[in-house]
Length: 391
Image 1 (spheres, one colour):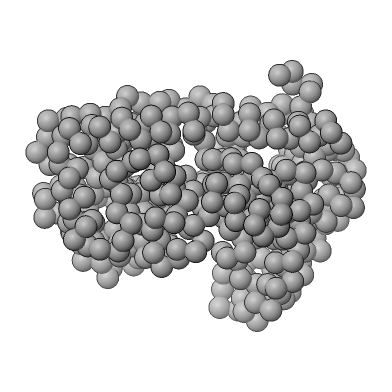
Image 2 (spheres, rainbow, N blue to C red; image 1 turned 135 degrees about the vertical axis):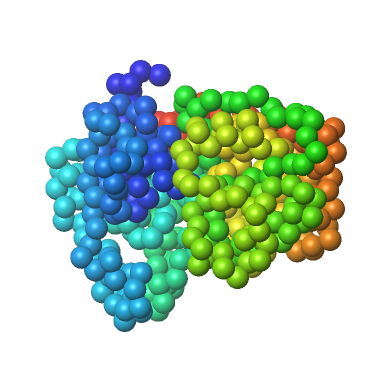
């Protein structure tokens, strides 16, 4: 595809285009090789100069004066003011639109900048393309304004020229609610990310399990604590590659044992290399406590686990997006109940060398194409071009 055929994109979202979180990583990978003169980024979260960013692209960081209050004890008293500031802060964006003259607007439905993207799309008659990582309808809570915002979300979804959902479950749910189809845009590898060999038998007596997901979801810490206890009894190790602090872990006895090793932040390439060279099994959790929202998401760390060549231990409800995907393709090492005996039996099964090697090969076969840069980039670009051409 010729670069002169690609549309000029105005990206307007609360999700920063940088390698810092799941949604941000996807946006970085979609835009990293996009023509520099055809992309302008407006994001509502500041970034550090030390964090990786796409060079040569104009960045505009919009942080409202009231935004810092959002995470303090005063948040509940100022929610209306913060909400109004976010919804009305379009002046600077309109100047950028008039100057840049974008062909399309791209947004992500996290927090509220997508509302501005929707309003500006209608006002300037610019096609809107929406990327949906989480189910905004269940993950956001804006108090007495939530009902009205839910209606705005529904109108925005129907208005969009294309909708890119993170999982088949999400796309099916939104079709049932809003009557229009979307496309599936899974988390993906970067264009130049290395794919490591599948990890097979290392001829070791003890196994190293690793977890690279979040520790902030309600029941993930106790679930991981349970796993740590089981792994310790089998003389293995649990390596945690996630943000943490001592206060977060203080009440979890097993997570404070010597066989649990916490690592500082590592970029994706270095993390995947370490997992491939040193780890034996990757752990993927989905929430029992928040089963509703997890039904529609898709765990981005699965992409890194597959690229690292590891077998994956799934633990979480069968309804969650990534677990449902794995079950539908016949992947076996999954526990879908909050049952300590069943998860202990599965951890023990991973000590069978033949099973572990077979599971590593199976998850690689399932995910290597599904999460490829080429497939997901073309899903995005083809979705954009097919509707841009029509308009």
